[in-house]
Length: 295
Length: 295
Image (cartoon, rainbow over all chains, first blue to last red; front, side, top):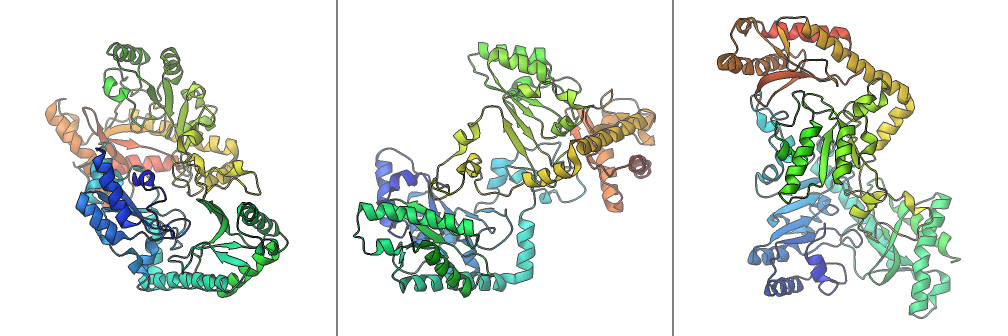
């Protein structure tokens, strides 16, 4: 979801690691009100798509309360970390949000698709979506009609996506999900430290990743001694797509890549499959090196 | 979907069988334009939820062309009849629509959920929905990026619902779907003629149903000799909910009911399962009689 502040913020109040800077957010709100606008909604992201960054929700909630602005937390990707006692602190303050989105089909391995929207104010979904179609939701039924939840959703008739998640939760338990998530994050840390110790790989931002996203460049031998500048940048931009194409041709592995702002195409390794192992990470690094060393 | 004419039309330009009356539609468009409004969209329904009525699409398309109004056909429920050479004439003119919705998960038995929206103008979904997120849809991929269709849909990442339908179509063929649909409609005709021949059942509207919806009242012995009027109406209104509750308690069968306009609660039998047989219909009628005879 794109916040109305997306356009206000640009890059100047986004931290180099992709996190909102609260002081800049507040300055932009004040500026916007001075222009006669009415900022009504702020979107905090818990686990951004590319960097896996967590916005400082608690500080943002302070600002939202101060200016009476709706706080939404897009925890589609990061929400799963709430299952982990070790990592949930990254979402401190999420309990203060007016609304939260969360996709158990992302980090938690529930089969596509399973998305939740949670709202603090009771009855708001019903208030927004109910059409009271008498031919669908009879009021004179034998059973408790509070079980008829179809009128709360835009879609009305739909697949019971949450059932898959309920079954998994029953089977694994919260502790099972916690182990699964901790393991994925440990593997990311393993990949991060591996990259830090090699001269042919380079992290896109400094410091340990907060989520399982590990963003890095592979630097082929031909670029290693080239001075920084436009020529190197242009060459580096072509490396990830070329390696990705070779990966697909040889059928050995697949990792996403993308540019971001002024940064050349880089790999974004994301681990959400709890069956992954350290040897998979070793293989990935070796495979990138094998496919990219002659570029 | 609710057309802007929903409010204009009320009941006066709806046929007693739940179909739009083209002359009344045109009169309402003229009236609306005279008031300075700009009617932009007409919704024809191919298979209404309660009566299973098919709006006269061809005549509505003439009117829409004349006044340059977008014609949408909601064929969510009725669209499956296009598979049947015997029944597809009910949607004559659907090829003239600007847009069509169609839920193969309804009449065609595809597993929930499988919904399609078809638009005549190429590129319109992409034009409306694409966000061109560089971190999702890279332009420098190895393969033909026209296969990246995620940017055409609101949801972006989603389940490939159409694959279930594709598999079924491959397995059954168009002829298989035709047989399945013809059979369901034959069973509805069977139920209709059964009801017409009994004094304890009464059809809600006269004439053979167009879709598999058979709308009827069961008239318990206590009401059969009662004169028409408010008292009978009120008693009749309670019959269907009571029988439905008894059905659920005895666990033998389930049929939907609802009121419609000034009509008391009536049963709406819908047959979409091709494994249904005439003996299921016989059982249903006997079961309603068994459960309702003492009411």
